[in-house]
Image (cartoon, rainbow, N blue to C red):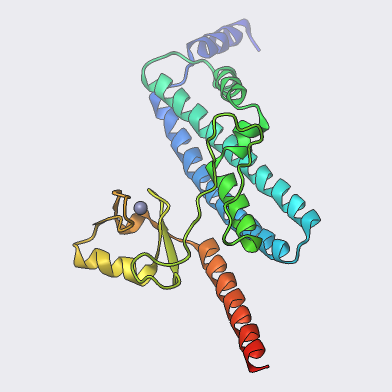
Amino acid sequence: MTEQAVQSLAQLQNSFHLKPTHTDLIKSVMGDSSDVIGFIRKGQQYITIEAMDQEEANNQEKILELDASYRELMDLESRVRNQNTTFTTLATRINNGEILKNLMTPYEEIQTQLQAKCTTEEEKYLTNEKYIDFRQNIWNINHPDELMPSLVENDDDDIVMGSTKISLKCPLTTTWLEDPVTSTVCKHSFSKAAILDLMRQSGGSVVCPVSGCNKGIVPTYLINDEIMAERVTRVKARDEKNASSTQFFDVE
Ligand SMILES: [Zn+2]
């Protein structure tokens, strides 16, 4: 390379910095990562249902393996979310006119900050709402009428996390949940047809019909709850089995 070429290359490198147009790329990465999070959710559902099966078979070793896989997926999700936060932060800084010569250094700085936030097992899993739900679903198999003890040992402040008993009956039909859907804003579940009917009658949105809950619900807040469906199927099967053995006993 001639001296002139080297000079102009150096000039080019010096004047280069990331511009707001470059942040479009960040948006497409964010789109991809929401797909990844969708797959993680799906995987966690499969693991939950499999763990419920294993609990029924009393196969504790297998449950420990599934528990580890569930935690791995949680870690993966938190990595994806950290990455999103990092990209959004970088995009905002670039759009606000900050001169960034490269992405890697600030990227790593933000990542390190985010990763430092969450360290203990307790913070990461045992007080995580989704993990508590997972454990609750397993617990309910053999203890349908007992509260799950807190996952956090030495629970000084008396907060009993995860011990809420979830009803398997629809608050609208008062019978077993059918095609259960769960509201993402308040976690209450309903039979799909019943809640959609109610929404139609009231012009599209309703105040959550569970007494004491005053969250507004629209159809897009409802997600098909396969795990709840699974639990209803199991409890119904158990009830039928109990009923038939009682009948047999009565006849005798
Ligand atoms: Zn509610």
